[in-house]
Image (cartoon, rainbow over all chains, first blue to last red; front, side):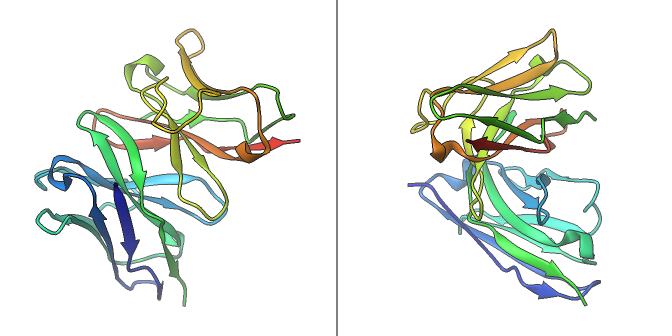
Length: 120
Length: 111
């Protein structure tokens, strides 16, 4: 059974940093692109970042480019999101998600989400 | 880049059929697959339609998807409405740089 468990969220001051983690199991991690998607309170979903299978390619939303960094550890089946220079508008629930197959951005499995609050 | 526009809300009675639209602002809707996700309060989204009209395992055939090039839009059709279908629904596509693009979401109320 495919399982994603995201963690690492919390309360941080503006300008601070957080590192989110996503542990996976139940599938061949090394063959899937992985992504982070966030949801601002009371708002819709926003794609944040995607990483390729071998970490050769990283993609970022304009709103986080230069501040966030995605990475993965294939032997451990984990994906990470390093978030620096955090702003109030980064507050929300962050979900890690598996991308079903190369060439089609379809998020077929999601973690339960980890909340991030940026506030002084 | 393009945006996906959804109605803020739709409603229907139990047993009836509702359609949620998702209009692409530029480029052809048929160029890139459209997915649909259901999100209940406090939960992560779960897919109900992928690649325009395919259903993930476990999703009932009351859920169907289609695209219409003439209106440049995708649709999620839910027939035989159940109170359990009440949720937010999001369409999603992507661009040529692998960026995910979500619609703003539609709140479905089952009256």
